[in-house]
Length: 106
Length: 167
Image (cartoon, rainbow over all chains, first blue to last red; front, top):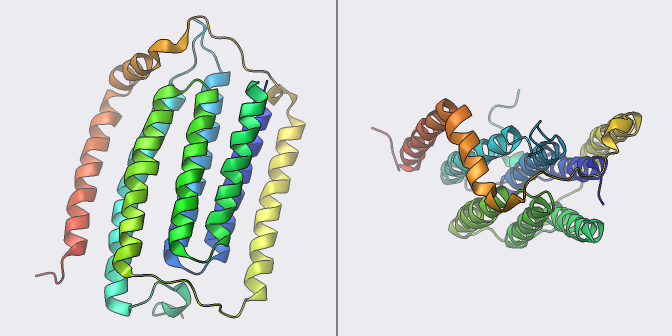
């Protein structure tokens, strides 16, 4: 049987992969996908904690799963707004490469 | 059996997640991301979270990724040209990710309380959706209403952002 530590390690690895994608990739769409991976890693650890922390009546603690539901909703809204911003950016600059977007650079 | 399923789907999920950040073609990245989400939904099933698992497939692997692919097609992104690899970025990124992973393994190995096997539930989990619904509409009714307002604000914002010129 997998233990809680297994789930947390897998979640941490997924978070690290997403963080690596955000830090190392230069395409703004792929950076956005890395953000989605990090959100999913957080969801995995929340569901794992919810299932391993039984309440007094012997059922899982559903507060964690409700929080995951909210995270999925907010992530969907975030993707819609973020992609709209990327499309507006592409219209103005004709690029999705972050190194070509240096107007704010000091 | 549970451990075997968990290991298979974890390895699938991590492999496709690596594909997201290693492949060069944006469409391949999006497809690996879909597979990674589906494998994560299977891991949710091993945690008896059937409702969350279905929502994961419907919302993430369905709606969100369709939006991603739609934008990739709209912007007509081609395979990335190979640019000069910046050594400083790779070293810095490697140090941050490695530091995070080593801190995480230290914390997990220092806490023996995390080494517990999944406890058995008192009732069969067949009515998982009803239990999530009770939690959502009783204890979390106000946040649920607020999230509806958030979705409305996001919709209006996207429509405004997508206009050609603002008047």
